[in-house]
Image (cartoon, rainbow, N blue to C red):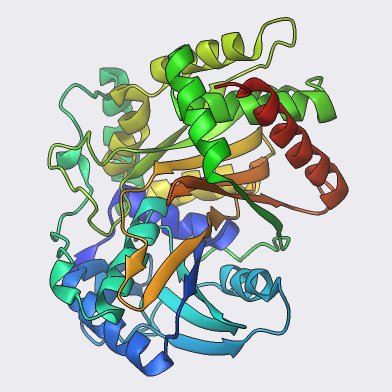
Length: 423
């Protein structure tokens, strides 16, 4: 395979200079050896095309190519403390992927800590979304337990404009403006030189789990109040943020929400490995004069109205129409002037339908998936597996202290107990 990056992939690659990779950390009971993990990766590189590409840059032109792509790296580490999974994971997140090295855009670490193993996977956002990384853990565990026949191969599908629903449009006047702009940047104006990487702050993470009983109580309360679990979680953390931080700062009045578009594409991709997501800033101002569940219902309606096909795909469609050299300049200008715009990113993967037992191995839960998002204050990842929620809350220490973040977490859990009591 050798193909030019799509507009979306190009934007994500350039954003990687300023932003970050995505990490997922899976806690696993049972023994895994580095040699067998390397063998499992070789199997999956045959199954999932984007695991077997590296990024080739020829001047301003960018390509995914499989020719000469190396095996996925496996680094083995002995843990030195209970939270060493965090330090090792963040080391991976802080290490950029580099073009023209022949290295794939994903790597892994096998961290041994007592009787448990932490499998740390770091992937570039241009080739994967958060869901893709969690299902990749499942596929690895199938291979490690001798069940590789259960791994479904990913189709070699390119998420370009042909995948966007036909109802999504770009205004005619904008298309008209792009004709001379694309000509200028394609034929006359020199391409932008490689942007210099900007310094970014290392984040910290809080991790905790919600018991199966409390998770079940939340499910029941959501059904009774006719809201999605995502809407309830949004209300829960917006309420905690309000009571600890107030809402005088406008950034606390909206939530940055990643959205899977896997079931909206012209070709359904299921659990294929790839980047099939979009996002939206959604106004969710918590009103303390209303009942908690009234807030959740309002958020439910607002979220539903905010994630239409047009809002999810409009900017993706536009990125595919803009000449790559013009897109580079737009991205650099935007990223150099970026500011914190939201109190939270809430990445909720919902209830993952995957096994927890794989022969001798048991999947205990996920930390993350989590990325470094410079335009938000707090990074929240929620995953439900084996009947319980795993929650990871990331933050930049210079923006919000660990003490304040801990108070937000404690308040959220107190509110959860209060508003699901008797559910």
